[in-house]
Image 1 (tube, rainbow, N blue to C red):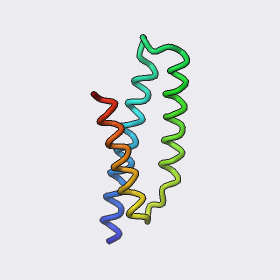
Image 2 (tube, one colour):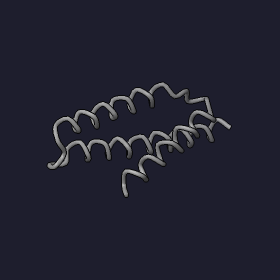
Image 3 (cartoon, helix red, strand yellow):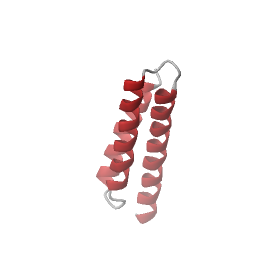
Length: 78
């Protein structure tokens, strides 16, 4: 059971890392206005903080965050 949670948590962290990278990419794009860069930076910081708050023993929270972040990443990559 513990190994299962470890794998799920690692997938969640990997998903958050990919989403963070997308935020950075969008914020640093040459055509992005300065105000919008701040929005992406704020989203990046909020994601980082939220990721750290997820309890590594809370299976449901891990699954919910992974699902939500994966959906957002998919949407941003369109």
